[in-house]
Length: 474
Image (cartoon, rainbow, N blue to C red; front, side, top):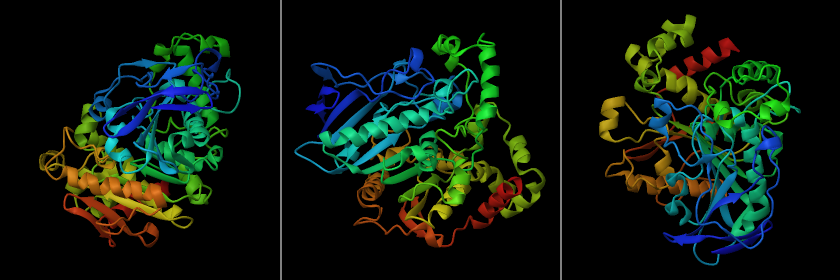
């Protein structure tokens, strides 16, 4: 339970067949002069540091009914929040594959300390699991003319700093720093894609998994972000502010101003971290050429989620489809399927196919579609909603709200796929159907009856229509 790393000695705990260390600082507190600055190394400590509990989560963004329905909002928060957690199996281990989880939450909510993300059942498969916090909201993604430098994605830089910490320290926990897989969902999946597109991450990981990570989102330029930042700061009472004025603002007030991932407010094309929108980097072949696993659920955003957040689904569909509305409806075979799946396909499913197709030209790539949902959920919504796959990836379906009798067995198979990929770049494993690469247009559908390799996508026509819409707007 005691591990010595470069910064000092950590005293952890043992539970459920694993060893855990929580609340490890991987960077200095991002407060004072370090607010809206690149993360700096943590201060070393003397004696044993208590690492038996998680550190505070980062300050959370504005509450929303949609956000709270998808992610448990944590209460223990602070601007001093750059902590990570490490878990490994019991016994003398070394050179284990390392999996670094980047949580989702629209870049507004969430924390690495959420229970599902720290699953002993995943760790017991023979991996070192690292879960991280990173700055959220306007504290993590913000630009203003008064701030020096060309960086606006401070939350992404936190993730880079966490990966540098893993590179330098994970061997002390039995992990192999040359065998690191980054994986994340939603904003975490978008982060994985952005890290693949960033020149700042060279050599920090060997594989990448993006779960429901978008991929075609618009990313505002640094100039636009600075102009927005001036307007936002004026709303905080900081018109014509200098850097010191901005860093003196109340952190909670800063976080009360939200960000919209779907409208391209985050991440920001800032030059210092993200050189261009993710889709452009992948299309140009400039992303990291590492093995890549990517996919979505089959019904990411049902209409009920949009209504809950105060949106008019029908009006949004007409706005997005625009002049191609009738053609799009025809590609879906009618209004019912169009209404059920259009948002999910535009935001998640087609972008995942696009990224997989582009990346498959350069490295082994595996595409999935997750359609596992309890019968009651299928009857109520029509499919597996956003984030449904997370408990299955972590083999943590027991006690989950929407689990059903077959969930544990399905989770066992799916978790093994993820660990197999993290171990040797190929998700296929004994006892389950082989996972074909995406190079020939195939993908693996994770169904209630088990995994199925799909060679002729029944959704091809409608995804082609969505792709045509993207191309017409470019």
